Amino acid sequence: MSEKLKKDARELFDQALREADPGKCVLEHIKLKGKQLKVGGESFNLSDFESVYVVAFGKAASSMAAALEELLDERITEGIVVSNVRSKRAFQKMDFHLSSHPVPDEKSVEAAEKVVSLLERSGEKDLVIFLISGGGSSILAMPSEGLTIEDKKAVTQRLMLRGVDTYGLNTVRKKVSQVKGGGLLKKALPSQVITLILSDVVGDRLEFIASGPTVPDTTTYEDAWRVIEALELEHKIPPRVVVHLERGRENNTSPTMDREQYERSGATTVVVGNNHKAIISMEKMAKKMGYNTLFLSSQISGEAREVAKVLAGISFDIKRFGRPVKKPACILFGGETTVNVTGRGRGGRNTETALSFCFEIIGSSGIVGLFAGTDGIDGPTDAAGAICDGQSRLIARSMGISARDHLAENDSYSFFETLGDLIKTGSTGTNVMDVGVVLVGE
Image (cartoon, rainbow, N blue to C red):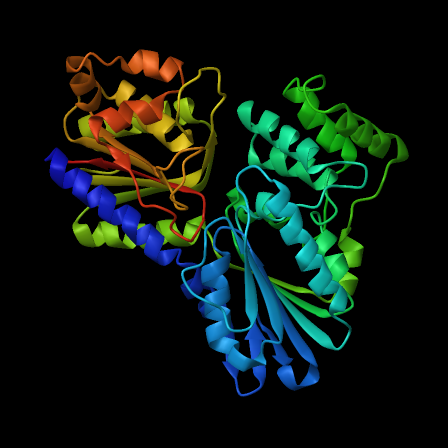
């Protein structure tokens, strides 16, 4: 039974990746009829524009840009595509730049400078189309005046090691950047601006997707400082960053772009794909497979170990009592958990969820869990996540491997690598956060 459940779980994950295909998502939301470009209920006559510029950045930038180029073809004047993985295709009107993720570096700054240079050439008679996806915060970086990329890198690394959530990470990032928090939109004005977004943020909060470069910023310097204080990083981040944030707090500096400025800009912003869309697709497939489905949420967050405990509890109730759904059952959820790294092992939030889950279901038959990132990357590893069942921990024990020790050291990657249960897809070219599948057989 377990092998069939594992096979089904993997097929469901593959379905999520197909549904989250960036090109597919773009073409579902932007249509061209003659010279009329229709986006999100708005219509734009391409004859009204002298030039059409495209700026795509993030993990899904290449696929999104390829789809748009397929649609607009020669109508694109010029464009830039920036991602952390080399494009598999050559663009006709756009230049590709390889950048860095999850920590920004000099390539991120160089890419941002090229984007800003292009935007400065645009004018009020031009159309600028942004294609934004997860990872954009790191892939495109331009530190605030007085700060260096090393300052940004140090802050990012410190925050991530302390298990910061997406809200906290992007709140701080926006306050140490010239292009985030609406900064890129300001540089594109007075052009007409369209932004198509592939969401990798819980709740699709636009200002936290790639740190909201083309939408208004509702956070303050005070908010950023609270994140630093909550994680006890006041004395562990670069002094220049501390001074910069304190100056912003003291001067009550306004955000890069507020809501009123955004409304006046006339910009159009549309979310073309998200985690919810992927989970719905998985749910439809699971029902066709014969499973009774339980769609928990596409907005799950919190500590990976705690989420695993909740999932195990629900699985046990299904197995024993047939509640809240009867067997065979498929529990689906999406979102983004966090890990407070205290050990020295390798792993990410998905492999840590998997290790925690198999820790809870040890010895149980007919329960399988798969937890993976849709971008194919789980933390600083080459795996998307892992798959496990009630025998995982027992098999490891027979090999002299302690699940408890690996969990204590945040060494979930090594644990599943030894068992051969890592999910490896390579870069998927998309990113709509993480998905989880728990199957409970008859």
